[in-house]
Length: 82
Image: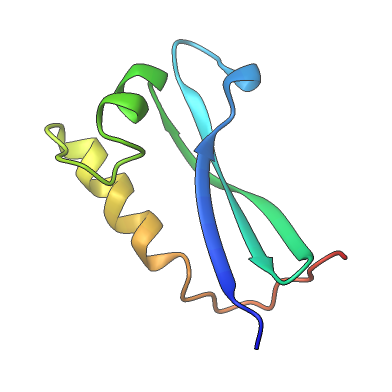
């Protein structure tokens, strides 16, 4: 049985006005799909909160964290590429 993995990361090369977009990657076996979450965060805050897995101190961080936790419950099918 293949494992489903979901990983979030900031894309530093797309930094604009001090914030970077948060991207996600879904993997099943050797297939994967990358997507933009539509959310942004300061790179230093992403690192300080361990990718929002640690303690969040700002209201927008908590909002983004909750949003990312709900994303794996996708309503639309995702096409994975081998």
